[in-house]
Length: 237
Image (spheres, rainbow, N blue to C red):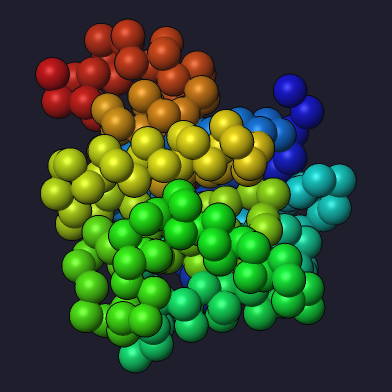
């Protein structure tokens, strides 16, 4: 597959402190790639580097366009959306107001309205809560809203940071099933940072394992699931 995102020698730092050390990775067009690793391995930092939130160097190319040096706003307008860890919904706004905020870069009112209804089809609970304040909803509902809001910008690449964090297993299963459907039907490429390695490797086609800001291992998700070393270190069995 043609890559929609390709990093070569990507490094990043918080101030003067380096946190990524020349990592290489590729997200194929229409594919799902998982980034796994322990706390502090550099997973969230990788997403922040892609979205221009910290100092980066090396090569990072999205759909033929270099991203290094671009602002977060410019990167969003190119077609990259991020669902941050902790969901980040606007708690005092209603579900529908949050979805409208997700489409702030767009001017096609009819298309926005159609996309809102499409989000309610993917996430029926949001349709039932459309006039409810986001802050009064459950954690799982807020995570669904965060994903739907990101999709309202019509991204070609969706970055997801720990979508299962703090959620009950049944809710996580539902969210991952919806992500799989969106990837299949909308052809949205996804880069998934996730601590639930078992579930991530079932959803993704390819995965990278990070250790202290470096790629320790990578390969097809099915192959990593079958690796005894990976199972012991990351999957817990």
